Length: 405
Image (cartoon, rainbow, N blue to C red):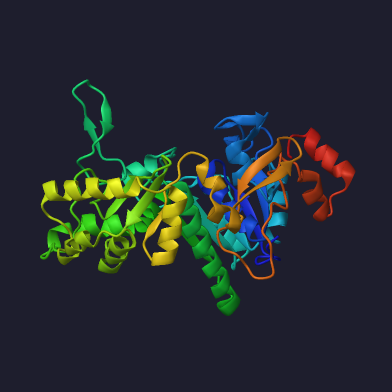
Protein backbone atom coordinates (compact mmCIF):
# COMPACT_ATOMS: atom_id res chain seq x y z
CA UNK A 1 0.00 0.00 0.00
CA UNK A 2 1.01 3.62 -0.34
CA UNK A 3 2.15 5.24 2.90
CA UNK A 4 2.55 8.76 1.51
CA UNK A 5 -0.13 10.12 3.87
CA UNK A 6 0.54 7.77 6.76
CA UNK A 7 -0.25 9.57 10.02
CA UNK A 8 -2.76 11.93 8.41
CA UNK A 9 -6.36 11.49 9.61
CA UNK A 10 -9.36 12.66 7.60
CA UNK A 11 -12.87 12.85 9.03
CA UNK A 12 -15.26 12.51 6.11
CA UNK A 13 -18.90 13.57 6.25
CA UNK A 14 -20.25 12.84 2.79
CA UNK A 15 -22.73 10.85 0.75
CA UNK A 16 -22.68 10.16 -2.98
CA UNK A 17 -19.78 10.44 -5.34
CA UNK A 18 -18.36 13.97 -5.13
CA UNK A 19 -17.41 13.78 -1.47
CA UNK A 20 -16.89 10.01 -1.44
CA UNK A 21 -14.40 10.07 -4.31
CA UNK A 22 -12.47 12.92 -2.69
CA UNK A 23 -12.12 10.90 0.50
CA UNK A 24 -11.17 7.84 -1.51
CA UNK A 25 -8.19 9.66 -3.03
CA UNK A 26 -6.89 10.52 0.45
CA UNK A 27 -7.40 6.92 1.56
CA UNK A 28 -5.67 5.49 -1.49
CA UNK A 29 -2.61 7.57 -0.64
CA UNK A 30 -2.47 6.08 2.85
CA UNK A 31 -4.44 8.52 5.01
CA UNK A 32 -6.70 7.16 7.76
CA UNK A 33 -10.11 8.21 6.41
CA UNK A 34 -12.93 7.80 8.92
CA UNK A 35 -16.36 8.09 7.34
CA UNK A 36 -18.81 9.59 9.86
CA UNK A 37 -22.32 8.35 9.06
CA UNK A 38 -25.81 8.70 10.45
CA UNK A 39 -26.77 5.50 12.34
CA UNK A 40 -30.18 5.29 10.65
CA UNK A 41 -29.32 6.17 7.05
CA UNK A 42 -25.73 5.96 5.91
CA UNK A 43 -24.18 6.72 2.56
CA UNK A 44 -26.81 5.74 0.00
CA UNK A 45 -24.13 5.39 -2.63
CA UNK A 46 -24.12 1.80 -1.38
CA UNK A 47 -27.42 1.23 -3.19
CA UNK A 48 -27.01 3.35 -6.35
CA UNK A 49 -25.93 2.14 -9.76
CA UNK A 50 -26.65 -1.57 -9.32
CA UNK A 51 -25.55 -3.77 -6.43
CA UNK A 52 -23.46 -6.94 -6.45
CA UNK A 53 -24.71 -7.98 -3.03
CA UNK A 54 -27.09 -5.95 -0.81
CA UNK A 55 -25.65 -2.47 -0.09
CA UNK A 56 -22.55 -3.16 -2.18
CA UNK A 57 -22.90 -1.14 -5.37
CA UNK A 58 -20.07 -0.80 -7.85
CA UNK A 59 -19.79 2.90 -6.95
CA UNK A 60 -19.56 2.16 -3.22
CA UNK A 61 -16.90 -0.53 -3.58
CA UNK A 62 -14.69 1.99 -5.40
CA UNK A 63 -15.73 5.31 -3.83
CA UNK A 64 -15.41 4.11 -0.25
CA UNK A 65 -12.51 1.70 -0.50
CA UNK A 66 -9.65 1.99 2.00
CA UNK A 67 -11.86 3.84 4.53
CA UNK A 68 -13.34 3.07 7.94
CA UNK A 69 -16.95 3.81 8.88
CA UNK A 70 -18.28 4.99 12.23
CA UNK A 71 -21.92 5.83 12.93
CA UNK A 72 -22.76 8.90 15.04
CA UNK A 73 -26.06 10.64 15.60
CA UNK A 74 -24.88 14.24 15.48
CA UNK A 75 -28.32 15.52 16.46
CA UNK A 76 -27.77 14.20 19.97
CA UNK A 77 -25.62 15.80 22.65
CA UNK A 78 -23.64 12.64 23.30
CA UNK A 79 -23.17 11.98 19.59
CA UNK A 80 -21.67 15.44 19.19
CA UNK A 81 -19.45 14.90 22.22
CA UNK A 82 -18.00 11.78 20.58
CA UNK A 83 -17.54 13.66 17.32
CA UNK A 84 -15.54 16.42 19.03
CA UNK A 85 -13.45 13.82 20.82
CA UNK A 86 -12.64 12.25 17.47
CA UNK A 87 -12.14 15.69 15.94
CA UNK A 88 -9.17 16.31 18.26
CA UNK A 89 -7.29 13.57 16.39
CA UNK A 90 -8.09 14.84 12.89
CA UNK A 91 -5.98 16.83 10.45
CA UNK A 92 -8.70 17.42 7.86
CA UNK A 93 -12.48 17.51 7.85
CA UNK A 94 -14.01 16.65 4.47
CA UNK A 95 -17.51 18.09 3.98
CA UNK A 96 -19.28 16.58 0.97
CA UNK A 97 -22.61 18.35 1.39
CA UNK A 98 -24.11 21.34 -0.40
CA UNK A 99 -24.48 24.66 1.41
CA UNK A 100 -24.36 24.85 5.21
CA UNK A 101 -25.62 21.37 6.15
CA UNK A 102 -22.74 20.76 8.56
CA UNK A 103 -23.04 24.24 10.07
CA UNK A 104 -26.70 23.53 10.84
CA UNK A 105 -25.60 20.46 12.77
CA UNK A 106 -23.18 22.60 14.77
CA UNK A 107 -20.03 21.13 13.19
CA UNK A 108 -19.36 23.67 10.42
CA UNK A 109 -16.07 25.40 9.80
CA UNK A 110 -16.47 28.17 12.38
CA UNK A 111 -17.33 25.68 15.12
CA UNK A 112 -14.41 23.45 14.16
CA UNK A 113 -11.97 26.34 13.90
CA UNK A 114 -12.97 27.56 17.37
CA UNK A 115 -12.02 24.19 18.85
CA UNK A 116 -9.04 23.40 16.60
CA UNK A 117 -7.62 26.53 14.90
CA UNK A 118 -5.32 24.57 12.61
CA UNK A 119 -8.05 22.32 11.19
CA UNK A 120 -8.19 22.13 7.41
CA UNK A 121 -11.85 22.13 6.42
CA UNK A 122 -12.32 20.98 2.82
CA UNK A 123 -15.82 21.30 1.39
CA UNK A 124 -16.53 19.82 -2.03
CA UNK A 125 -19.91 20.04 -3.73
CA UNK A 126 -21.55 20.32 -7.11
CA UNK A 127 -21.91 24.08 -7.34
CA UNK A 128 -19.55 25.09 -4.52
CA UNK A 129 -20.33 26.61 -1.13
CA UNK A 130 -20.43 30.21 -2.39
CA UNK A 131 -22.65 31.74 -5.05
CA UNK A 132 -26.40 31.85 -5.70
CA UNK A 133 -26.66 28.10 -6.47
CA UNK A 134 -24.66 26.95 -3.44
CA UNK A 135 -27.57 25.31 -1.63
CA UNK A 136 -28.90 23.39 -4.64
CA UNK A 137 -28.26 19.63 -4.28
CA UNK A 138 -26.68 18.23 -7.44
CA UNK A 139 -26.87 14.89 -9.19
CA UNK A 140 -25.43 13.30 -12.30
CA UNK A 141 -24.41 15.74 -14.97
CA UNK A 142 -25.85 18.90 -13.39
CA UNK A 143 -22.38 20.36 -12.79
CA UNK A 144 -21.32 19.55 -16.33
CA UNK A 145 -24.51 21.15 -17.66
CA UNK A 146 -23.87 24.35 -15.71
CA UNK A 147 -20.33 24.51 -17.09
CA UNK A 148 -21.54 24.39 -20.69
CA UNK A 149 -20.75 20.75 -21.25
CA UNK A 150 -24.18 19.83 -22.61
CA UNK A 151 -25.42 22.22 -25.32
CA UNK A 152 -29.04 21.38 -26.10
CA UNK A 153 -31.72 22.00 -28.68
CA UNK A 154 -35.41 21.23 -29.07
CA UNK A 155 -35.92 18.71 -31.87
CA UNK A 156 -38.86 18.76 -34.25
CA UNK A 157 -40.38 15.81 -32.39
CA UNK A 158 -40.71 17.90 -29.24
CA UNK A 159 -37.87 16.28 -27.30
CA UNK A 160 -34.70 17.98 -26.02
CA UNK A 161 -31.49 16.49 -27.36
CA UNK A 162 -27.77 17.41 -27.54
CA UNK A 163 -27.06 20.12 -30.09
CA UNK A 164 -24.23 18.96 -32.40
CA UNK A 165 -23.76 22.46 -33.76
CA UNK A 166 -22.66 23.98 -30.47
CA UNK A 167 -19.34 23.54 -28.69
CA UNK A 168 -19.20 21.54 -25.48
CA UNK A 169 -16.90 22.87 -22.76
CA UNK A 170 -15.85 19.43 -21.64
CA UNK A 171 -16.80 15.83 -20.90
CA UNK A 172 -19.01 14.86 -17.97
CA UNK A 173 -16.22 14.15 -15.48
CA UNK A 174 -17.28 16.59 -12.79
CA UNK A 175 -17.03 14.14 -9.86
CA UNK A 176 -13.49 13.08 -10.63
CA UNK A 177 -12.46 16.60 -11.58
CA UNK A 178 -13.73 18.02 -8.30
CA UNK A 179 -12.12 15.27 -6.24
CA UNK A 180 -8.70 15.87 -7.76
CA UNK A 181 -8.84 19.64 -7.18
CA UNK A 182 -10.17 19.21 -3.64
CA UNK A 183 -7.45 16.75 -2.67
CA UNK A 184 -4.65 18.64 -4.43
CA UNK A 185 -5.63 21.87 -2.67
CA UNK A 186 -6.01 20.14 0.69
CA UNK A 187 -2.58 18.51 0.43
CA UNK A 188 -1.12 21.92 -0.39
CA UNK A 189 -2.86 23.29 2.70
CA UNK A 190 -1.28 20.53 4.79
CA UNK A 191 2.15 21.53 3.49
CA UNK A 192 1.48 25.16 4.37
CA UNK A 193 0.23 24.20 7.82
CA UNK A 194 3.49 22.37 8.41
CA UNK A 195 5.29 25.60 7.57
CA UNK A 196 3.04 28.16 9.32
CA UNK A 197 0.79 26.23 11.71
CA UNK A 198 -2.30 27.71 10.03
CA UNK A 199 -5.41 25.83 8.99
CA UNK A 200 -7.90 27.02 6.36
CA UNK A 201 -11.26 26.55 4.70
CA UNK A 202 -11.38 25.16 1.14
CA UNK A 203 -14.43 25.43 -1.14
CA UNK A 204 -14.28 23.19 -4.23
CA UNK A 205 -16.95 23.35 -6.94
CA UNK A 206 -17.38 20.44 -9.35
CA UNK A 207 -18.80 22.81 -11.99
CA UNK A 208 -15.71 25.01 -11.65
CA UNK A 209 -13.52 21.92 -11.98
CA UNK A 210 -15.17 20.94 -15.27
CA UNK A 211 -14.35 24.36 -16.69
CA UNK A 212 -10.77 24.30 -15.39
CA UNK A 213 -10.05 20.79 -16.65
CA UNK A 214 -11.46 21.50 -20.11
CA UNK A 215 -8.75 24.08 -20.57
CA UNK A 216 -8.34 23.75 -24.35
CA UNK A 217 -12.03 23.98 -25.16
CA UNK A 218 -12.73 26.58 -22.49
CA UNK A 219 -9.97 28.88 -23.72
CA UNK A 220 -11.17 28.53 -27.30
CA UNK A 221 -14.80 29.25 -26.44
CA UNK A 222 -14.03 32.23 -24.23
CA UNK A 223 -11.45 33.79 -26.54
CA UNK A 224 -12.66 32.81 -30.01
CA UNK A 225 -13.80 36.36 -30.79
CA UNK A 226 -10.24 37.61 -30.14
CA UNK A 227 -8.50 35.35 -32.67
CA UNK A 228 -7.14 37.37 -35.60
CA UNK A 229 -5.26 34.63 -37.50
CA UNK A 230 -7.08 31.33 -37.94
CA UNK A 231 -4.37 29.70 -40.02
CA UNK A 232 -3.63 27.21 -37.25
CA UNK A 233 -7.24 26.34 -36.44
CA UNK A 234 -8.09 22.86 -37.77
CA UNK A 235 -11.10 22.56 -40.03
CA UNK A 236 -13.66 20.06 -38.77
CA UNK A 237 -16.79 18.96 -40.55
CA UNK A 238 -18.25 16.38 -38.20
CA UNK A 239 -16.73 17.47 -34.87
CA UNK A 240 -14.36 14.53 -35.15
CA UNK A 241 -11.37 16.40 -36.57
CA UNK A 242 -9.86 16.63 -40.04
CA UNK A 243 -8.06 13.87 -41.87
CA UNK A 244 -4.89 14.34 -39.84
CA UNK A 245 -6.64 14.16 -36.47
CA UNK A 246 -9.14 11.37 -36.81
CA UNK A 247 -10.22 7.89 -35.75
CA UNK A 248 -9.76 5.22 -38.41
CA UNK A 249 -10.81 1.59 -38.69
CA UNK A 250 -8.07 -1.01 -39.12
CA UNK A 251 -7.91 -4.28 -41.07
CA UNK A 252 -9.13 -6.30 -38.07
CA UNK A 253 -12.18 -4.04 -37.57
CA UNK A 254 -10.61 -2.29 -34.60
CA UNK A 255 -9.81 1.42 -34.39
CA UNK A 256 -6.87 3.77 -33.98
CA UNK A 257 -6.66 7.49 -33.32
CA UNK A 258 -4.35 9.20 -35.79
CA UNK A 259 -2.92 12.55 -34.64
CA UNK A 260 -0.60 13.92 -37.28
CA UNK A 261 -1.29 17.62 -36.86
CA UNK A 262 2.44 18.41 -36.66
CA UNK A 263 4.28 18.32 -39.98
CA UNK A 264 6.84 15.79 -38.78
CA UNK A 265 4.22 13.18 -37.88
CA UNK A 266 2.53 13.54 -41.27
CA UNK A 267 5.89 13.22 -43.00
CA UNK A 268 6.78 10.13 -40.98
CA UNK A 269 3.41 8.56 -41.77
CA UNK A 270 3.59 9.20 -45.51
CA UNK A 271 7.10 7.75 -45.75
CA UNK A 272 6.32 4.76 -43.51
CA UNK A 273 3.41 3.71 -45.74
CA UNK A 274 5.16 4.54 -48.99
CA UNK A 275 2.84 7.39 -49.91
CA UNK A 276 5.25 10.24 -50.54
CA UNK A 277 2.66 11.57 -53.00
CA UNK A 278 0.67 12.79 -49.98
CA UNK A 279 3.55 14.77 -48.50
CA UNK A 280 2.46 17.97 -50.22
CA UNK A 281 -0.51 18.28 -47.88
CA UNK A 282 1.93 19.45 -45.23
CA UNK A 283 2.42 22.69 -47.14
CA UNK A 284 -0.93 23.88 -45.86
CA UNK A 285 -1.07 23.56 -42.11
CA UNK A 286 -4.58 22.23 -42.53
CA UNK A 287 -6.63 21.65 -45.64
CA UNK A 288 -9.30 24.35 -45.71
CA UNK A 289 -11.12 23.06 -48.77
CA UNK A 290 -13.59 20.76 -47.03
CA UNK A 291 -14.25 18.68 -50.13
CA UNK A 292 -10.52 18.08 -50.49
CA UNK A 293 -10.29 17.30 -46.79
CA UNK A 294 -12.91 14.58 -47.09
CA UNK A 295 -11.12 13.09 -50.08
CA UNK A 296 -7.90 12.98 -48.06
CA UNK A 297 -9.71 11.37 -45.16
CA UNK A 298 -11.05 8.62 -47.45
CA UNK A 299 -7.55 8.06 -48.80
CA UNK A 300 -6.09 7.77 -45.30
CA UNK A 301 -8.88 5.41 -44.26
CA UNK A 302 -8.01 3.13 -47.17
CA UNK A 303 -4.41 3.07 -45.94
CA UNK A 304 -5.41 2.16 -42.39
CA UNK A 305 -7.55 -0.70 -43.71
CA UNK A 306 -4.37 -2.42 -44.93
CA UNK A 307 -3.04 -3.32 -41.48
CA UNK A 308 -4.30 -4.46 -38.07
CA UNK A 309 -4.45 -2.28 -35.01
CA UNK A 310 -1.43 -4.06 -33.53
CA UNK A 311 0.56 -3.55 -36.73
CA UNK A 312 -0.25 0.18 -36.75
CA UNK A 313 0.89 0.51 -33.14
CA UNK A 314 4.17 -1.19 -34.05
CA UNK A 315 4.59 1.23 -36.97
CA UNK A 316 3.90 4.15 -34.64
CA UNK A 317 6.62 2.99 -32.26
CA UNK A 318 9.16 2.33 -35.02
CA UNK A 319 8.57 5.47 -37.09
CA UNK A 320 7.71 8.05 -34.41
CA UNK A 321 4.09 8.67 -35.43
CA UNK A 322 1.24 9.77 -33.18
CA UNK A 323 -1.03 6.74 -33.61
CA UNK A 324 -2.67 4.98 -30.68
CA UNK A 325 -5.36 2.35 -30.10
CA UNK A 326 -8.93 3.64 -29.83
CA UNK A 327 -10.41 0.92 -27.65
CA UNK A 328 -14.08 0.44 -26.93
CA UNK A 329 -16.13 -1.35 -24.28
CA UNK A 330 -13.93 -3.57 -22.13
CA UNK A 331 -11.31 -4.03 -24.86
CA UNK A 332 -8.97 -1.62 -23.11
CA UNK A 333 -8.35 -4.13 -20.32
CA UNK A 334 -6.68 -6.51 -22.78
CA UNK A 335 -4.46 -3.78 -24.21
CA UNK A 336 -0.82 -4.76 -23.50
CA UNK A 337 0.10 -1.26 -22.37
CA UNK A 338 -2.80 -1.09 -19.91
CA UNK A 339 -1.81 -4.52 -18.60
CA UNK A 340 1.81 -3.49 -18.19
CA UNK A 341 0.81 -0.46 -16.10
CA UNK A 342 -1.28 -2.57 -13.71
CA UNK A 343 -3.99 0.09 -13.53
CA UNK A 344 -6.72 -2.61 -13.65
CA UNK A 345 -6.67 -5.40 -11.09
CA UNK A 346 -8.93 -7.78 -9.17
CA UNK A 347 -9.28 -7.99 -5.40
CA UNK A 348 -11.58 -9.80 -2.98
CA UNK A 349 -14.34 -8.08 -1.03
CA UNK A 350 -15.55 -10.14 1.98
CA UNK A 351 -19.19 -9.81 0.93
CA UNK A 352 -19.25 -8.84 -2.75
CA UNK A 353 -16.53 -11.31 -3.75
CA UNK A 354 -14.11 -10.70 -6.62
CA UNK A 355 -14.24 -7.11 -7.78
CA UNK A 356 -12.32 -5.39 -10.56
CA UNK A 357 -10.75 -2.12 -9.50
CA UNK A 358 -8.84 0.66 -11.20
CA UNK A 359 -5.65 1.55 -9.39
CA UNK A 360 -3.59 4.70 -8.94
CA UNK A 361 -2.29 6.45 -12.09
CA UNK A 362 1.00 7.57 -10.51
CA UNK A 363 3.57 4.97 -9.57
CA UNK A 364 5.71 5.50 -6.45
CA UNK A 365 9.18 4.03 -6.18
CA UNK A 366 9.45 1.26 -3.62
CA UNK A 367 5.70 1.10 -3.02
CA UNK A 368 2.85 -0.93 -4.46
CA UNK A 369 -0.74 0.25 -4.65
CA UNK A 370 -3.50 -2.04 -3.43
CA UNK A 371 -6.88 -2.03 -1.71
CA UNK A 372 -5.85 -2.50 1.90
CA UNK A 373 -9.34 -1.88 3.29
CA UNK A 374 -12.51 -2.94 1.52
CA UNK A 375 -15.32 -0.41 1.23
CA UNK A 376 -16.89 -0.60 4.71
CA UNK A 377 -20.38 -1.68 5.61
CA UNK A 378 -22.47 1.00 7.29
CA UNK A 379 -20.73 1.66 10.63
CA UNK A 380 -18.48 -1.38 10.26
CA UNK A 381 -15.62 0.06 12.33
CA UNK A 382 -17.76 1.87 14.92
CA UNK A 383 -16.68 -0.37 17.80
CA UNK A 384 -13.04 -0.26 16.74
CA UNK A 385 -12.99 3.54 16.51
CA UNK A 386 -14.86 4.07 19.79
CA UNK A 387 -12.49 1.71 21.59
CA UNK A 388 -9.60 3.82 20.30
CA UNK A 389 -11.24 6.74 22.14
CA UNK A 390 -11.26 4.71 25.36
CA UNK A 391 -14.90 3.56 25.29
CA UNK A 392 -15.66 0.23 26.94
CA UNK A 393 -17.69 -2.53 25.29
CA UNK A 394 -20.48 -1.92 27.77
CA UNK A 395 -20.53 1.79 26.96
CA UNK A 396 -20.57 1.05 23.23
CA UNK A 397 -23.51 -1.32 23.71
CA UNK A 398 -25.37 1.43 25.61
CA UNK A 399 -24.67 3.98 22.85
CA UNK A 400 -25.97 1.59 20.22
CA UNK A 401 -29.09 0.81 22.23
CA UNK A 402 -29.79 4.53 22.57
CA UNK A 403 -29.40 5.12 18.81
CA UNK A 404 -26.38 7.39 19.28
CA UNK A 405 -24.08 5.16 17.22
